Each structure stands twice: as structure tokens, then as C-alpha cells.
Length: 337
Image (tube, rainbow, N blue to C red; front, side, top):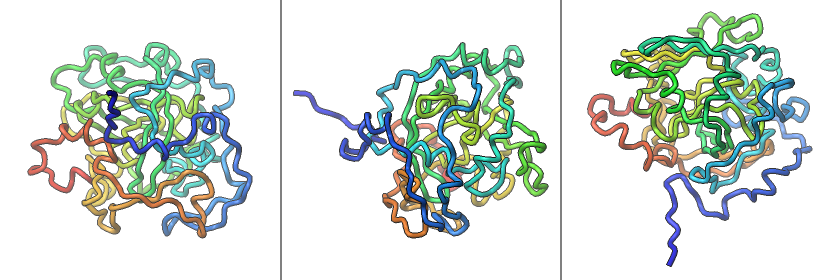
């Protein structure tokens, strides 16, 4: 007799979006009421909603869609493409959730990725050459923001481990440091002198080579949009969303733990580890549950998006909990901030 064994991140089939509905979803035409999902976030009327689709002239468009890896099946409603393309954080373009228009000014070709540090041979490689050497697939990941809202996104891309193998790090390398672009002429947020630009993030080598760590180059069966981190971003679904650095141009393999962007700004609230744990509150609010956003209708003042319990490691404990054994005494609650 066949027994279906659910993975840690999966929910019942009844909670998933029908595949046909996902692939052929209709555009939402109803204006969302002005309001907020959290105190500082305004509602999004129709005219401020992003146009969905690949960046114009993207030379990798013919690579998509790619085959979905069924080991990362959704088992939960996939958030609407319009929502994900409109409602996100990208501080390079400002602190609001409506930065998508500003992001369109970012030139993403040519785009060079520098790989250096403790590697056999430092190099710079054009993104369009790099992607040709990577094993592309689609994975559907749940993501949780430290602000206590969550989404589900079908990313296309490749395992970060494939890029680590490509870089050939030395045995002394303990961390992977990732840095975003810096161009204040087009990224107005980078003119704010109180932020430590450029944006820096990092993972341990064990985290970077874990099966879940993923480099996203596409979304919803197309090349990734500029506002979502084109052409190259990180997706680590067991951590809070601010760990998923966008617009990556520089990857270094280093021996010392890198001082990351939000950790440098406010270490008490946004530490290096940033693993999701419902029992460890943010210093200013609980992390016990989250607002799951499915569509643009979920982000207005009068909306009532589904509120669900937050899961340890965002539901991916089976795959990643072992990475942190033995670190509890040294880092304690900081593993989750």
C-alpha cells in the first residue's frame, strides 16, 4: 500500500493553487483599498501595480520556462505574480513597497559577476555566460518576511551549491559573502547616507551548499523582474526575507563572518543568522504567526489575508535544523535574528 509522506514544508493538497489556474491566472482588475499590511506600508491602488513579465529585451528569455523540480512542490497556494512583482522590499530603490517603477531604470546588461576571495582562481564572468553553465530548474518556495507576512513564489534558477562548485573555494573558506550592485545614479535609495551601501549578505559554507539554497534567475516561468532582483538573487526559504540579497555582482569566499547590511544597522533586530522561529519574537513584535498574501486584494486596509501559524525554519526544519546543532549555546536567540 502506498503511503504519502509529507515533507516538512508541505501543506494539504486542498491548500494548493490548481496548476492550470496558476499558469493561466487572470489579472486582478479590482482596485485595492488604501491601507497597510503593517503600520508603515500603504495600500496599492491599481495604477501603482507592476506590469508582470520579463524585463524588456532580456537575452535569456528563451531559457524559460524550465522544468519544475517536484521535490519542491508547492502544496500551498502560489501567490499571484502581480503581487510578487509589486509588493516587495528593495532598499536600493527606497523603503516603500512600491519601488517597482524606480527599479525599471536599472540597466541589467551587461552584468558581470565577480568571484574572488579564497578560491583557486579569481574571475569575472558575464551573467549570460554564467547561466549557460548552470543546471536550471524551477522550485516553489515559501518565504517569510521579518515584518510577519509571507508569500509563495515559483523561482527558476540553480542551486547555490552549483555556483560554489564552479568557484572552487579553498578549504579555508568558511563563509560566502554576496554583494549587490552600487549605482546611486539610478538607485535613489543608495543616496541615503545612513545606510552602509552596498548591500552585503552572507551564509556559512554549510548553508550555501545546503540543498535549499538557491540562486534565482527567473520567476513565474520567465526571467526575473528588475524589482525582484534581476538578473541574479539569492533565495533561502528557511531564513527571513532580508537574507535574500538581490542584484548580485560580487561573490567572495572568506574566512571571517561578513558584517551584513542589516546586522550592521541594527544587530539586535536583524542578525547574521536570521532563521525563522515562531518562539523568538522580534524585539518589537511577535513572530508567532504571519499574514499569507495570495493576491493584491490582501494588502489593503480592509483586507483580511489568511493568518497562519509560523513554522520553525519556515517549515524547512527537516532540511536545515542540523546546520545549527552545537551553535545554540554560542549564539542562542541570535540564530533567529
